[in-house]
Image 1: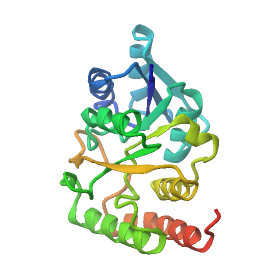
Image 2: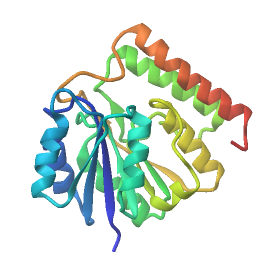
Image 3: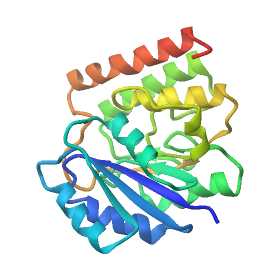
Image 4: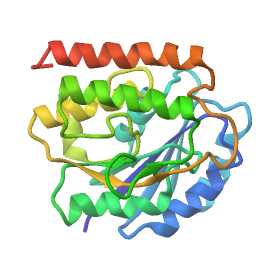
Length: 238
């Protein structure tokens, strides 16, 4: 029987995390546990998760006080969890938890190795971000497609399911969302089957975006995305 681990990296998501835990577990079609990796949120997110974990064996808390960052949080969740398939997503409800079964079934039923929640395949869309954020995403994804291949349309998704065995050969690299570009490109180059599953990206339910809201924020993030794309384009065996 296939088991699933859902990794939820959190920082200041106290209003979202318990409803999200409930939605993830309610929508599960396979035996599922959830690993919340919290970077010592000052708003009390980790305390809420700890209380829930004490009464629900399917919920696990990794409370980090020394480390921080999105990519390392996802990597820690992958390492500590034990499901045959690992899923991760943002924790603000912009990525609908009811789409997790579709990602998992792309692996279990359709024999994919990596399934990516995609805003840019038929049936997907992004209605949750500002026009500036949408333009930033489109430009980065176009650059990635031109330089790295058109086999993936949403290189910056961050809504991913993968067979655990994939991570025996690929580690997550990067600081923020650029890790997803790196992961998908290296997976395809190593021969893993990557498929995209449509989803509707909506506005976050509560709290403040970690990506930022100003042009300066996007330029700062964008430098890492561009650097990752260029590095992968120049180093085909990376």
